[in-house]
Length: 141
Image 1 (cartoon, rainbow, N blue to C red):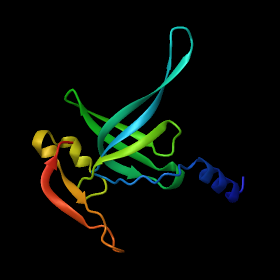
Image 2: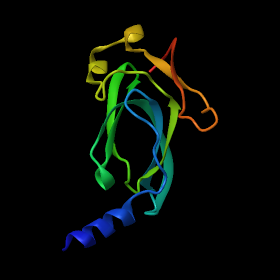
Image 3: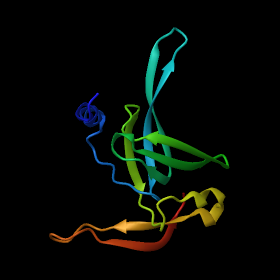
Image 4: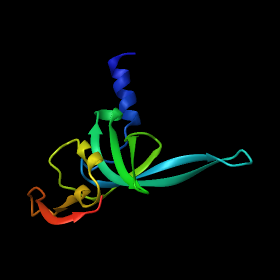
């Protein structure tokens, strides 16, 4: 295959909506789950996975994101391919303020130490870029 054909396939499989989140943000990833019933039919449903983005990796159609949450006191991480047809939507709930692109140190933190401070994004003034302000109130992650 030529490089032109591969690029065309990548553009065809890429999702059109821009995902506006980064490391430290709390997101809800809505995943399509396919289940087989007792009578052999396949049912589809949407299952939300809400957690903190600890890394984004890759470029183009192969971009992936790792999301971490605490479920019953146990840390659960899932890696999602952003442009997969199984991903229904990704909604940013809280913008977090972190200094690193990959926040693997969150795996070792518990309780109040695992909180991430919130970034408040204000509406841009006429013609200028959006102002970002770090707020002292931390959010539960």
